Length: 326
Image (cartoon, rainbow, N blue to C red):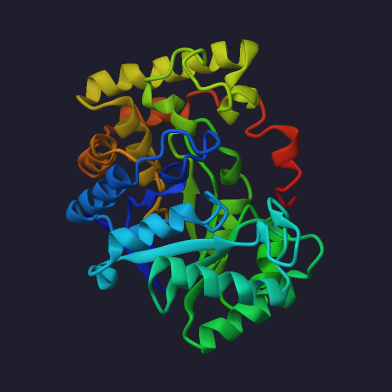
C-alpha cells in the first residue's frame, strides 16, 4: 500500500479505526473480539500499518483488543491512541481531563492494555477547557523524552489551539472529521496544517457508514445507536443526504468500484499528508476499504465529487458539539 506522511511519521495512507470494535455506536452491542482481531490481522496482511484507538472506546475495550491483535507484530504497526475523555481522578468516562496528572495515569493504562512500552502517536482526544494547552503539551513532551510516546497528536482542536500547541512541541497529526459530506476543514484547517507541517488524519471518512451506500433507513439501527440522534440521520436532513449518497454511487458505477471505495479514493487524492482511518470490525469491510488504494478516479470524476453538496445537518448533536474546540 502507498504511504502517507504525517509530520515526520510514515503510515499506510489508509488506516484502520478500531472504535466500533468496542461497540461504540451502541452501548456495547455487537462486540465480537475474535472477529475484530481477525479484521486487524487481515488489515496488516493487506499493508495497513496504522491502527487508531482510544481509551474512551469501551471504555478501554478497544485498546485491549488492539493489544491482543498486534502481539508478535508490534514492529509492523503504528499504534495511535487517545487520552483526555476519561477523568481518572473521579470524573470517569466522558469527562474532559488533560491535566498532567491525568495524562500520566492514562498513558500507563494505555501502554498496559496495548501490551507495549511505547505509543507511536498519542492524541489529546478533545481539548480540555480546564487545562491550558501549553501545560498539556509540556507533559506530552516529557513523555516523548521518556520514550513512552513517540509523536503528539491533537483531535478536534481549533486553529489557534493548534498553533499554541505546536509552539511548545511539534504536533505530528491532527484528527477531525473530513469526507465528501464534511468539507469544513478545507477552508482554514488544512492550509494551517500544511503551513506547520502537520499531517491530517480524517476520522469517519465514510460518514458514519452512510457513504457506503448500505444505509437507506435508520429503522434498522439498534434503539441505542447514537446515530439515531445525529442531525444528519434524522428527518429531512437524512432524506437529503441520501441524494448525496446516490451521486457517489453513480460515480462508483462508472469507476467499477463501491461507493465506500470512491469516497476513500476521493480523500486520498487530496494530498499525501492525509491518512484516513475508516473504521470497521469486519474482515470483508477492511478488504473493501483497503482496495480503495487501487481505485483511480478520472479528473472528471474528481470534479463531480468536488461539486457534490455537503451533508445537511450538524455533524454532531449539541452535547457532542460542546466538546469540540472552536
